[in-house]
Image 1 (cartoon, one colour):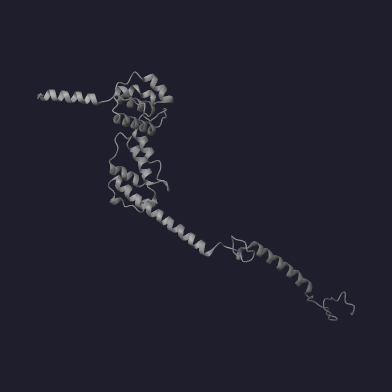
Image 2 (cartoon, helix red, strand yellow):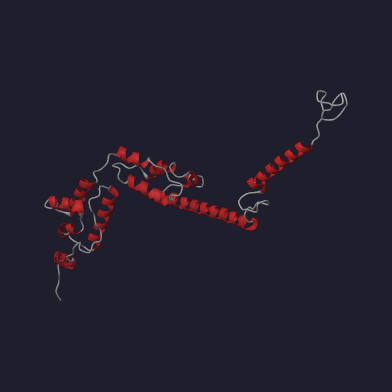
Length: 265
């Protein structure tokens, strides 16, 4: 039986390792980048390509060679001008960031973080995820506790009223508490809506007792008020016609006659 020294065994294992590394390319990578100057899209593209490269065990040289297959538009034109420069894949990542999303100063990132609070119907998961992505761009990001302290006051009041800051030490704690609060709010909303439907189904739609139309009560019916006004006016005219004069001649005492036109004087 052949005997191997420790050095020979290590050399054999290295040779086997190199033999198992298969050559690959980015031809099957679905990630695409067209040169949008958006830090989120740049980071998503870099993460997708980096993951694909690691899973497929693609060498740096093959990844650099295959970049034209996943770059489009302005990014493809940019790559044609800088293609000879990168030597390793980390150079590609650095050059992409410098060209399409230059790092922002920390004060500008903080301004974006505090720019908007959580909207009423925005899930807390989405809100926290969006803010944490900004925190990750800081040169010296605060600790997780510091980030939570900054974001807690920006959470919508309905959620914050149901979440105890004292019980929260991590973002996982915050999200778990917020999800429970959101479920409670949804249940409350559904209960209120069902109660309103039950009232509507038992009482039925409002109907006027005078004109029989829906949507108003008899007390505010315009048709009823118009009829009452016409009746009152007709009655006033009739009363004026049948009412006897209230004066009489003081000579002959004839009703409705004055002394000036009295024939009996």
